Length: 337
Image 1 (cartoon, rainbow, N blue to C red):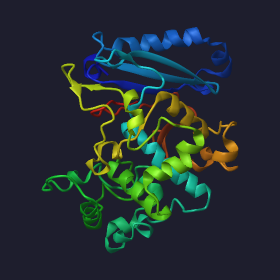
Image 2 (image 1 turned 45 degrees about the horizontal axis):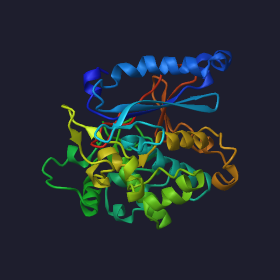
Image 3 (image 1 turned 60 degrees about the vertical axis):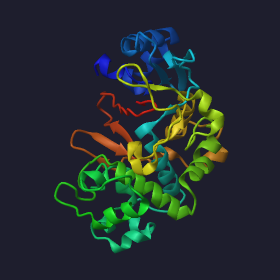
């Protein structure tokens, strides 16, 4: 991506470098110094020279995490980016909803093939929405559009929950939007998945996230919304001319469809979050995983002809491909890869 397009923003980059990429012997021989050099070569060209933004990198190799930081989290306060700086995760935050779903499936509390209307009962009065399952919502194969506004060009103002239900019940699946047939990236689906989880457990999504994921994992810098106590660590985003864009910790709301509701977290916390997703959590396994493995629940739910799989919002390549996958989100507070 051209440097000038990245310049205005704070960026956090969470990178997975697993032994399969280069082979175990190569990875074990790779020193931290060499990794730092590789990261610097890739990152420094996109870091703004004038201090308007920065990059946080977490590199995972052979189960170990190394952090590398560049630039500023807040230029006015002369605050550098660190592994504990707090970023707006944007669409990367979708992983929390899909992980909660996977966890519940593994515990037998619901099933991937359950219709979403089973839990969001207002949708039982709809048409094609009654064919959409929880697994399809999580894997971007529901057929639902990226946002309701793609269909409802006439809508003005912010969406409310009644607006959302009305849209879903009136939605019609055409040949290019069939449940379970195509990969179509959808913020609409992820918002609906959150609502379904809330209905199933009779608990707000932020509370579910804290009780079942971030609390047991000790992810104390991850929150929705960001509390006052953590605001001082939130990064500042910048506009095209280097002007501050939005306020650190700004929350635009779930029905703004931006990233399907923004969650805030730090590179350190997100590196911690990788561990249970890769079955490597020895210190927390008794209290967090309860004897089951998250990776089993996150089996690929759909595969494309090119070998790209959707594993509950993780995008992965087939075993014989080595092309890295990335996800970019650019929002008012900060983007996340």
